[in-house]
Length: 123
Image (cartoon, rainbow, N blue to C red; front, side, top):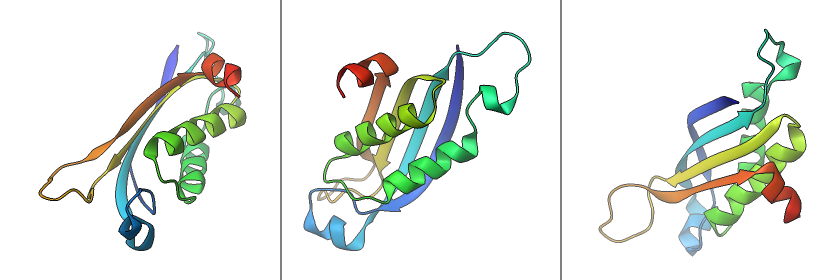
């Protein structure tokens, strides 16, 4: 099993339950890990997953506001599975850099790990 990684993706979005987040937006950091079954021999790009296509998909899906990062992460993972047939398991971490929590310094977020089988069962 091979792991395709996209780490430290920086995006701005309007995700969150607080009204201000929907108006001013927030900065996020995303990490994506995609497990793919590849042949042991030398491969070509059509046998694996193109990083640029994954980034474009994440960026596009991230542009649609969600109240909960849990729902956003599941939505993006489902889209990865429907777009990339080689993907077997996806872990997506979404961190909110400036959470509206009084006195809190740091990041909050979710990390969601789903297999193709889990997503297909729960369609």
